[in-house]
Structure formats: C-alpha cells, structure tokens
Image (cartoon, rainbow, N blue to C red; front, side, top):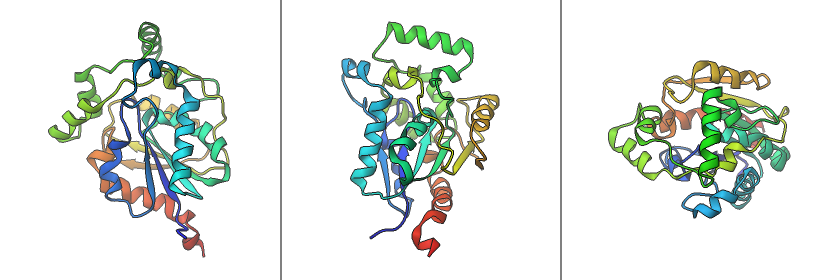
Length: 244
C-alpha cells in the first residue's frame, strides 16, 4: 500500500485538467488532475451546473484515485471550492494549498470577492449569457500568460472553455477548514489580481504557511519543476512513512 498523501489538482476558470500535464510529469507522488464538469459540455448543461457538481467531481476523482489521504491544490477561482471539499473529505484532507487562489468568506461567491465595478459587470453579463462566456483573448494572453513561451500561451487561450456561471456566482456555504493546515502560494508575477486582493484572501486563512514563487498565474506551465518540488515539501510531512 502507498502511504503517501496524494495530490488533488484543481484547475482555475476556463481551464481543464490538461493544464497540470507538465506538473504531473515532475511529481513523484500519486496525483490526480481533476476536470471540473463543464469542460466541452453543451451550453444548456453549463447553465445547470453549480458548486455541488464541482465538489462531487473532485470527491469522485479522489475516490477513484484510491487516495486515503489527500492534499488539495486549488488554483485561482478553485479556492472557493476548498471549504465544501473539506466537509466532504473530512479527515482525509491533510492540507489545503491555495495556488494564487481566491479565499472565500462564508456566504460570499467568487464574484463577490472582486472590486465593485468588476462584480456588477460580471453579474450583468451572466444574466445575458447564462451558459457563460470566454474572457477576451488579448486580456487572457496579457493576464494569464505573461511568463509563458509564445506557443504555450497560444495553446492555453485556444483550449479555454466558458466557465459555468454557477461556480462563480453561487455563495460558499461551508466554513473554511480550521483543522486543516493551509498553505498559500503567492505568485509574484501574477497579473490576475492586485496585491490588495491577494492579501485580503490570505488574511481570511488561519495561520497559513506562505510560499513565494516567482511566476505568473500559471506556474504549472511556466515552472512545473519548481512547483512540483514545493508541493512535495508541503505534502511529505504528512506521509505515514515520513512519520514512522
């Protein structure tokens, strides 16, 4: 039996499990890259999806991978899924890693964490487009891909899918997992959020361990080896073999 803690890798908005492929080639412990529902789905299906669907898909992936214990790595918007996932996984969740991620308050949604202007604009857009929409291509290249090679950046923007609005609009009903060690990875070249927004997320966590990575918003693509090494350092202390 493998006594190591597995990694559950959860992608951000408009992306898919494919974004973790370079990292999976580097990690030396069991890991699963989850595809959240809505990747390649029909518009009608995207309209009906909500946070519970995302949580169910992650929990199922952890079960199918056979992980008795897991460290959850939530990228970007996926941070809002961590509280509900902690409730579902219980003691199986050994650590939560917030990778340039949004940290919610109970009763707030991902959209609620944005500045007022962006918040109101997105709510209006999603009323008009309930199946979701893609972010502007040039904006995605500028904000998401600033430290990527050109070919990789083009591949990222070409593979994006509209995110189900329910993931972004539904309030988080669960509390942050107080008994689970939290690690926040600050991405020092990240253009998707201001330092103030990032710091506000960090302050919502209880005694997080902070890590800095000199990377943009997609370090699993720009620095997969460095990120893999960091995740290994985070997860190893929880391995039973390491504690024996």
